[in-house]
Length: 79
Image (cartoon, rainbow, N blue to C red):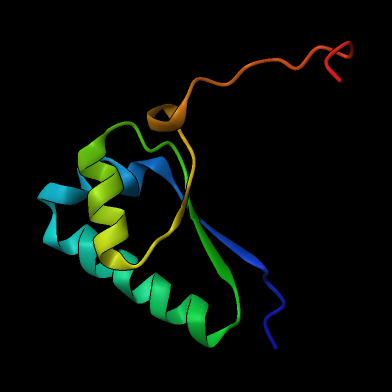
């Protein structure tokens, strides 16, 4: 069987998700597939609250991107 633990949704799909019924349907189907496969969906490159809300409405709860803070280098001196 499929042994994927994470399914990443690319930023190209996330972009303008709130304006695209086709992209919304695709994400909803990916969420259903992930549930059936015991995998976790992670949306990448989420940039604004519209994308975040659209993802939440589709059932995606794990997201990363500039909406949640800019990437930063961690210093080896940080605890």
